[in-house]
Image (cartoon, helix red, strand yellow):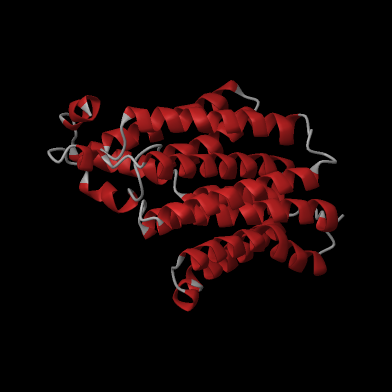
Length: 296
C-alpha cells in the first residue's frame, strides 16, 4: 500500500488517461481476437500455445483469487482512492492481477515467437506497462502484479516449448484434453463449495466458473479439431478477413445474446463461456470447412 500511496502523489489527468489506455490492452476481447486470428487464419500451432498459456494461467489466477480472497486496495485502506475511471474494470478479488495474467499470456507468448530483438523488447515493455498501470490506477498492489506475472510467465514458457517450439503434444492430444478438463472440473467443484458455504459471493464465483467453462471447451475443442477437423488457413488476405470478421461477430452474438436468454447464474455463466469457445474451436471450423477448399 505504501507504494500505491507513493504513486498516487504523482497522478495527473494526462497520466490517468495514458495508463487507462494501456490497461485496456489487457482486456479479454483483445486476447480472444488474437487467438482467433492465429487459429482461423494464420498459425494454429502458435494459437494453441497462446490458448493453453492463457487458459491455464487464467485458471491458476482465478483459483488463487478465491483461495486467498484479498480485497482491493481501497478496501484494505479506506483512505486510499483509486482512479475513478479504472473502477468499473476492477472486479473480483485483488490478488493476483487478472490484467497482468492476460497481457503476460498474450505478449509473453508472442515475445517468445518473434525473432527480432526489437519486437521481443516491445512485447515485454508492454507487459511491464500494463502491470505498472494496474498499480498506478490503484487497482492492484505490487504483490498482486508480481505474483500474477510469475505464475503466467511460467505457463507461457512451458506451453510455448511444449505446444509450439518442440510440438511435444503430438500424439498426446487425448491425454492433454483430459488433464485440462479435470483441472477445470475440480476448480468448478471448489468454487461451488466455497459459494454454497457462504465463503465467496456470487460475483466472485462467476468469474471462476467462466474461466472453467472456457477452459473446458478449449480442452474439448483442441482434441476434436486436432483429431477430426484439422483445417488449414486460407491463402488470400480477403478470405482471412472475411473468416475472422464473421467468426468474431458470431462469437460476440453468443457471448452477449445468450445473457438475457439464459441469465447469469453460475450454470449459465459456465455454459455461455463454454459455448463461445466451442464456437471458436469446433462449430465455426466445422462450418467453414464445409464451404472452403482450405482443409486437411
